[in-house]
Length: 375
Image 1: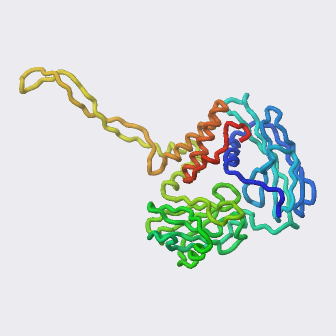
Image 2: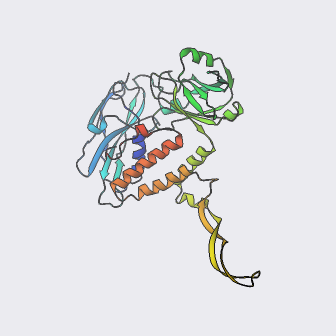
Image 3: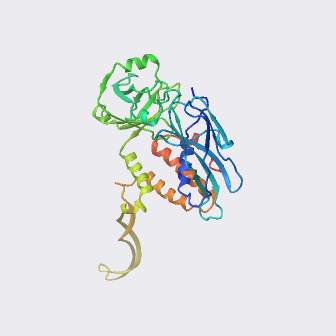
């Protein structure tokens, strides 16, 4: 077993991702060094840890095979990390550094990384947690009514690959709600056995680590072919070794597709939203009061009336732009233009909450304190 535990945190990853956009003039970071019996999975990683100004924080990151970079849990308080019992695989380590860039207005922070060092473990425990391995897991889907409410529910079961308690979705039931959305059902062994006997349905099941926590999640497509009005589902793994059920399910309707397209576009295309700007004529009335000639009275009469005018306003085409996507794109721009630390943190919090809104998950309870410069 692996003695030294590490955690992958979407909040940490997301903040580092944001800050990495501003790593323009940061001080070079020295790479880590490795000693010990690397092939057996027992080794020590050393790196230069320090917080002398202008350096605000230093940490160690690890990557297994072609998976995502993850922050080693306690590395922000140490300069030496001992690993024992690492499973087979190719590990990379790099040092991250957060630096105050007060004199580089308007960018408040620089984040930079060292070059990576590689450790190849061949004599440790077999691994099924490499991202490349997780992506080969196979799943099946079945439908039935687990709670006898007349609505078709969904049963997802991993049919090949990995241990049942490795934190990735293994067996889970989603109950359909009145609005055709789905919720994770906390099922007991008997209910899972019942669901396992339901008729299988031919749906498209894709896997990807969508929240960057080291455990692949599932996208269930073509549901409406088998369950009327059911939207495609995004199902997140729990990451818990004692729970093979999903943690959260959220619908992948056209609105989310539009939003995720907007977010992707705002990252990769300068002035992305400009292509969707349209001119809309808007009629409005103006109250006019004046004298006018009244042919009935054959004289000037004072009165009021409304006259119709039309003006043109600029807007974004709702066929291609969602409000959440627009919020994210503008907030991303605001982050780059933040003039003070406070503005940077406020915008980072907003971006974090926008992502939670997009995914349909309440991240509020887990959101880091962005007022802490080490967050």
